[in-house]
Image (cartoon, rainbow, N blue to C red):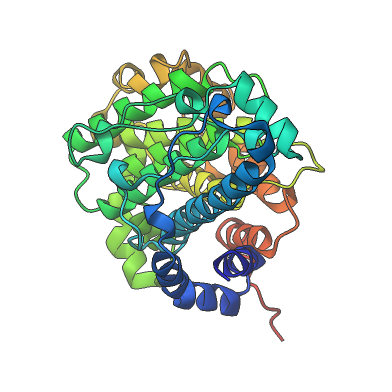
Amino acid sequence: MTQAALIGQTFGMLSGNPRHLAIVQTFHGTIIAWARRQKMFDQTTAPIHSTGIAETEVESAWRRWVHSEEKKRVAVGLRIHDAELAELFMAEPFLRSSANTRLTVAHNDAWTAPTAKSWARVLRERDLTDSTYGTTSTDSSVMSSIIAVSPSFALYSLLEEKASYIMEHTQVHSPETQQQITQFLTSVYNEHLRHQTDSDPFSLKALWHSLFMSLYCDMNKIECAVGREGFEEAQNQAEYATIWASSAAGHRCAIHAALILKHLQRIPIGEEPAIHVPRLLYRASLIWYAYTRFGRDDYHGRQESSISAELEFPELTKAGIDGRRVLFAANGFKRTRPTTSESSTLFHLIDLLTRLGHWGISQKMASLFSVLIHDRPHYSES
């Protein structure tokens, strides 16, 4: 029942229909309650070794393992949905992020094994104790996780967990907290994403970059500044938008947004994007709209040289990414930011948001920028 509800919730999230989204938001807590009653978030499984399974028991052991693994993956899927809904609705997540409650999931080659014999062969080739995603914690902080070799689905869950953590503490992003999260995410990138050579079906690199936008920008205030809550609230938040877009944080987020575009442009046209991809493109577009609309390179007398000196961001330099070069190219190969109407990066983001995927949520999000940029309303005037 929980698995079926999760599938239905996915449709509601991606449809773009306000009624569907309202239903998803209303009943999301109910689905989590069902999962808790089934103890899906409290599963513990002893490590499985191929040497401990008799040949006559392989079939039954495989079926028991599949049943347990399926429940774990449904629980992980609920955590991912919880983080995505929190991001969409700018609200705190239902499920708290904690290294102590993080579930372990097996590598895909074990999970996708079609028969008991092939599953047993995978166990022999890979020690699940060492290769299954897991963490230890020295304190209750989610920041204290020690990264192990992890399958892509577990890494996806980990990044979404960090998104939840950021949403939980959105009002108290102290420099110390930002530094802790930045250090952790930098370690994740260098350990798992930097040398990734296989396919990236979950668009994990783009998701990784999006976490820095959430960390160094108050997206709620930016949305208000561009008119989400009407004219008066837009005026109230205009100062924040100007200060942010002109600051090092604004440049930082613009760089990460440009890198999101770079990664998502590589998705094959026939491939179904991950559920967070429309949100990432929308956020990246919003970042670039605010960066070009509100930002001023001469804000409070700042010189070009001082701005350039601030573009040394640790998560980029330690990952081997030249932030200055990325921003220079994204600005249209200019040292100063373009105007909104001149920004090719912004229009590439909006275009990709429109074209990537067939779900209604992408079209809804793209239509908002038609209003912002072209002053085109959703209705026709009689």
